[in-house]
Image (cartoon, rainbow, N blue to C red; front, side, top):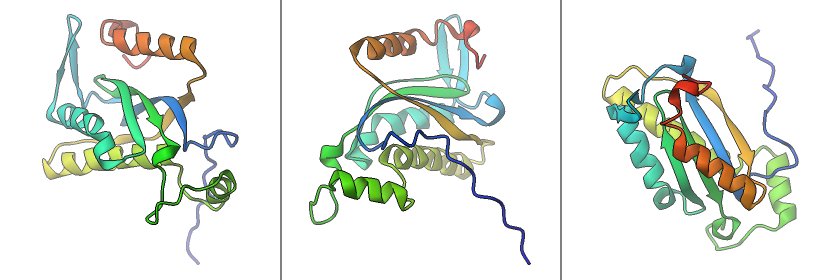
Length: 174
C-alpha cells in the first residue's frame, strides 16, 4: 500500500479561465534566494540564470503564440511580468478555436490553462538551464497572478514594474 498524498487545492480563481486576458504575475525563487542577480545603487547585475530568464521572457511569443510578455522586470529572487494571453491564437492543430463551452470543459477536465502552461514552461526551461550549467537553483512551487481590470489597474502595475529595481530596499522580497 503506497503513500498517496491528497490532491493539492489550486490557488487559481475558479471564475477566471486563464486562457484570455492580461495578467500581472509574480514568480519567486525557492526561499527567495538571490539566483537572478544583485541590485546595487539602483542597477541590477544579472547572473547567468538571470540572463537566461530574460531571454525566455523576451522570446516567449516565439514558443507560445498565444502569449505576449508586455512588460517585465527580473529582480534578484523573483520576476514580475504583465502577460497577455490571447485566445485568438489558441487554436488546435486543425485551426479550430475552442468555444467557451469547450474551454470550460477543458478546465473542468484538468487541462492546464494557457497562462499556467506558459509559466510552467519558463520555470522548466530555466531549471534545465541551471542544471546543465551545474548551478544551484530552485523555484518556489507556485506563482501569484492578478487579472488586470482596466487601464488604471494596468498603469499602476506598469509603474510598479518600471520602478521595482529602484524600490528594491522597500520590496517585500528584499
